[in-house]
Length: 106
Image (cartoon, rainbow, N blue to C red; front, side):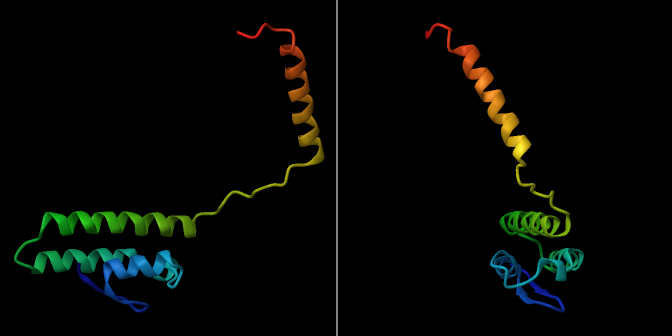
């Protein structure tokens, strides 16, 4: 796998992914454009490329894009259920339960 040189990391691409997945390196500090440019430059400068290596790069790149998007996009707030929400859910369940109690069991 190609060696990547960034201000916050220098080494193979799979190690970069490993460090990010372990939270040892902040994905927001990594320029994925720079990673891609360096990898494409390595492919163009070589005598060719192996299909397996290219597939591995696409796989690692997709994981990096996914992790970065999760880090940058806002997460929806998780709200605690209110008393009225719980009461409404309980009332719905009791209504459903009462309406089905007289139906035959098949």
